[in-house]
Image (cartoon, rainbow, N blue to C red; front, side, top):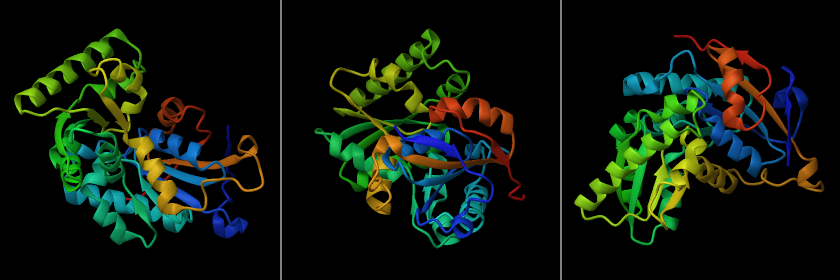
Amino acid sequence: MASIETAPKSSRAEETGSSTPIVGVFDSGFGGLTVLRALVAKMPIARFAFIGDTARLPYGSKSRRTIARYAAQSARFLVQEQGAEFLVIACNTASALALDAIQEAVTVPVLGVIEPGATAARAASSTGDVLVIATDATVQSHAYAAACRARGLRALEKACPLLVPLVEEGWTDHPVTAEVIRVYLGELNAEAASAGLNPDTLVLGCTHYPLLRPLIEGTVPKGMRVIDSAEAAAEAAVVQFGGISEAKNIGEEKASVELRCFATDSVEKFERLGSRFLGRPVGNVELVDLGG
């Protein structure tokens, strides 16, 4: 397994002269660290810069215009200040509502999490009917439904607002959480049956939900595939960014991932909860101010 090294503050591409590209990863909070976790597994010698805009979350309560402005500021920080050559938008709300604005704000390739999730659902589904669980903002955007429809799928979306706070409370293997999941998925499957759908695939449309995957897989009907959009985004990044996914001339066990984490507020909370999402310590998180 690749180890993670916390990079010193001077370790930018232009300062070190390193030929290894920097991948910038952005989220409105720290749930996107599940995407970073998947990226680290796929790119064992890459360098990463992650920013969580914790001062201004949740994005879901903001207007599309405000979300686009906030997301563009984070994108420019990663590219202009940290030297990122690729961007992964590890936020479903920003991917749904601000991907165009981010692409206009920077000149590097940008990848969101919704398109890869829909593509993975298309590959997994035999019936062409899929279910999506996500936050209110992502569901209201209907971005997953549109992405699935573009791939010939019928998608039924459901907001599951209780799941994020349960994950952040650390109740990822708790009877209360299991019961909440049972109720949500029971309602969703009933809605699917009423609509005449025969779903065989469930998309996890929130970056917090991978931490609940064991509970979810234990609740869905037998044979239903569960698609982790974080994993799907990492797979798509390997294809799109190419060339930085495999260590050359060294074994993977000797590979070392360089990581810098930034937050716009609540650094202590980020450090405490972030390791849960990343699956290992996040190191020292640096506080940054992106403006209003």
